Picture (tube, rainbow, N blue to C red):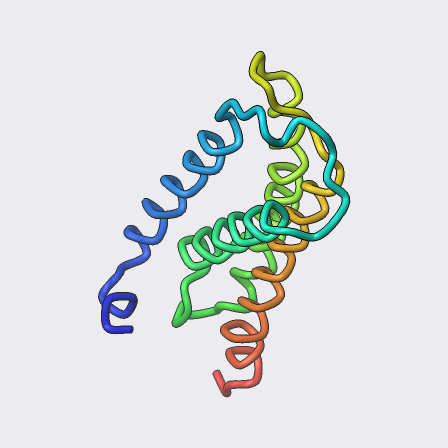
Length: 138
């Protein structure tokens, strides 16, 4: 845990950018094994959820770091804009996979897993960092 304590907001923003590019690269890799829609919950959906949970936590930590003077206000504005952008990014990655000229296809269940991971991260960040800051005396 000391490692995370030593990271600055700039580090988190850099990690978030690398994570975002990593998502685009990973979802753009050609594959022949997943050529059809998979409605069941499995490893593929879990990976999607974890990718977007990491995306959400890293960007939220970079945009509204704990200890910010007015964290609830920061979260309301920056977090709100990021929430909309994150939802669009999660849905957009499947459209991105659909238009790529490799063996990938858009899967509505992947979008659901992406959105679930992202929303889980968003709610978790709020509950762990923002909500306690709202209750603290200013």
